[in-house]
Length: 458
Ligand code: BES
Ligand code: MN
Ligand code: MN
Image 1 (tube, rainbow, N blue to C red):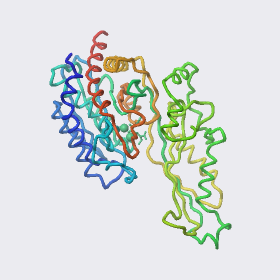
Image 2 (cartoon, rainbow, N blue to C red):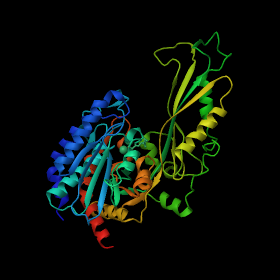
Image 3 (tube, helix red, strand yellow):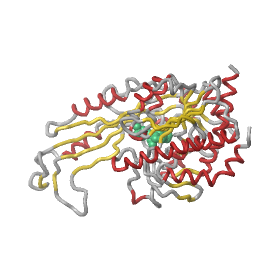
Image 4 (cartoon, rainbow, N blue to C red):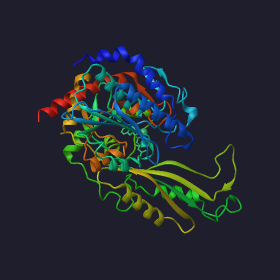
């Protein structure tokens, strides 16, 4: 094998320049005002794959944003790896909290600051560059298919039908994804599970119009007060979610699995210090690592209503709203949980208000095996470039399509991400370490080398 570390080092300025071009495009899938930019990002990804040496590169249309596809079939007898990533990003808001603008990438303290730098442009782009390097050095030991989508951050709802309709084009032996984090730069890890998601919006209406809070205050329901009471009642004193049936399908981890999970390096004092919180908080009986990976949650993501402008306005509002998400764990179904929430939320509403529940997108949870060739190949690759065996660790976020890869294509995924939890993804000042970006490009070729070897030995 070539000295990939050296090759990456020699090309790093070029790689960064090309990544910056992609990061300058505000490909926000959630907001229609960025539509042209999302489409432009797809074109740039397509051009990048062509430049790297992929064949049959195309934009596959969907009812939403296109899926960028490209492949290199070296030899039909070699294993085929399907690389998945997403070129869409989260909205950059709140803009005023960015030190430098979200779509003007800069390097500070060894990190690339820009929306999408870690999630997921910087990460899928490592695969494009690693592929390019393997093509240049004539060492591509597997067939590769790239599928980079533009709607991950809005639930990937058009991707499932795409998988259904393109089973033969997407035929592969496994899926390789870099869209998660590791424990630390000196503690490599591979994500072995993702949470699912049920996301909805609630609207609570009190009186038919805004009222003077002195004239009417005390006599009719204030929908904001009622909404707060309803939300507060969804958990008990031990922070268990009390929606009937909520935990019914949760598979409890065995004692051995819990011990394994809790043995991962984690310093709660540092965690609190880094987040500037006086204490952690969560479901009784579980550690912070468990609460953030293998336990379901319920959180308000936004809440509004009434007067929120400057100064004081005395008003008893007519309406109150909240956006609520529930992170789900394996075996919980997003549709079922959404239904349970809706039924319960209506049932606890007092007669003084009306409640409307609007479901948004969901996502299925997933677990990925540690006894597969793809996991072993990823672990061997990381061991090679980090000098340490990676630790298997469950992740708390969601990648909705991972469950569908298994259900529709029959493919297992390996989640070899190179980000860190502190990269501030979805938050102002998202960043991705240059170390992580380059380490990823260096590690990926070894995945293919070991995967081909493992498959050949069978
Ligand atoms: N890359 C993240 C998911 C992630 C991040 C998993 C870090 C594990 C560790 C992904 O882009 C994401 O943000 N997903 C959304 C899914 C949703 C929009 C359906 C999420 O988790 O909120
Ligand atoms: Mn992502
Ligand atoms: Mn994301």
